[in-house]
Length: 266
Image (tube, rainbow, N blue to C red; front, side, top):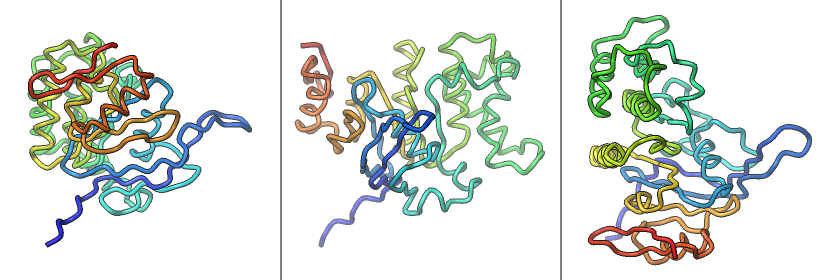
């Protein structure tokens, strides 16, 4: 009996994206194809300017495409009703703490924004909304600050609140751009545990990470260089490690450390 092919959470086919205004926008993605397996943690890595964040934003449906298509759970992203898509796919932006304009909101109200796709117009929060917000704040160890203004928090505390907002959506697919920004090592470890919990419960996580050793903990790795994918597959394979070393000009090597892999300078 032939094994069943993996279910795809996201499938990008022949993506081309250009950024910038004016008559000559800058091409960033060039014919990218990548398949994100459902129920797995996939990390996207590569040097600065490789197109990592642009790919993640394209997967989230946040950028116009010059060519290609993104499918979410087998259906073209553009064909999803906006409400259903927001309930199914949730997004954490890089630097989201600095540009969301929520400094005067209480922490609990910031996290409640993650429940908007589940609420009717001008409807008050339901018991399910309140429970989701509390659970998310507990998961990120931010519950004690629930009645503090968001603007009074440190950068790391804000990042944990934004992670809680993402979790409160309870989406099947989570996209995170540099989610470890401003987090100290213990809370980075908490984030890894949260990701593994999401995957264990059948969720899908896609993260852009600069921390290569953390990215190597993911189930799947997407390695990018100059707007193209040069490797996509399991993170433990030698080909994955060779691709990482190559895109960073062999200035680092992947070494075994117990049951994991770490990236160290050459």
